Length: 347
Image (cartoon, rainbow, N blue to C red; front, side):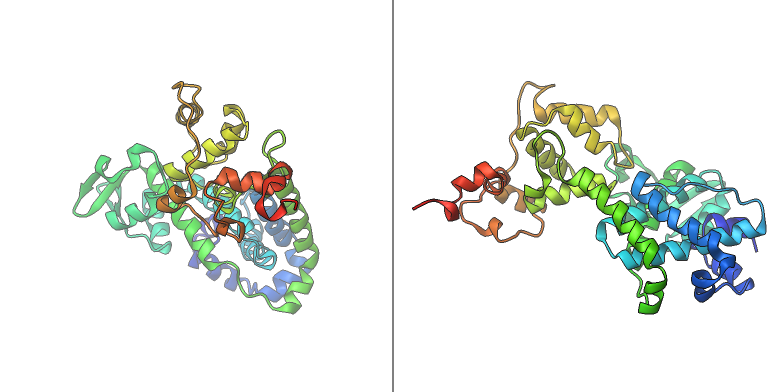
């Protein structure tokens, strides 16, 4: 058993075997003073995911340190499950997957393939080259919008795509993120919830603080709480490190610009994406806002948003026949807009 690998990648079957070897179970993890270090590390895994969307690396020189690292992972998952907040779940999944992909780049290629298989990814090592079956490649690369990730720009052999180690590990990041998101939240018994309530409360406070910081406003008097559901969903995606489709990025940028945000403020939002490219993003944002092209684009109408597949969870106001554009929704929801809204007209 490779205990270092078990600790570096605590989601492996090998990690569970390592814990079993030391008779480490959930009850001990929650209650025993011997696992206080694991609980603290597990808590930090979650807090770091909120603060910086990446779980840090800790020294793993000794068996005890490795056991604490392995056990910190189920504790972190338990805390995320107790909070049961979609934003936190996605952010935690991103943080753990980013950590994994960074560590994997320094591993032997056969180790990378082994971990890929545990993530249910069809991968092989041939003549020292990492390959992934094109179906898995398409699934995992679809969210990465850089043109070099297009299948037509990749080298195929026998249904497999040849990849550099860096690109292979980046693709596995999405596999890991999908795995965690599909598994959480876990069912947590009430007696366990009571024992971890203090840590859960601390996480909820930090999460709410972050949501307030990024959620109440995004520049000047622009109020996110009054945004239509589609724009809120797109904005939440950027803040959660997700890569938006071109149509979603266009809609979000043009909407924010229409409300008075400048390119630098908008760029700050997109900088949270794991595949953020400053030069490409700057070009796209300035093109949409008219700074680079001289043509200022307006946000798409609601009908266009629907055709693009980016009309998310419409609410009652969206059903108002007068709300045919996201900006109309925003004007009605804001104080000035409410005075013009049909339901608030004075007799």
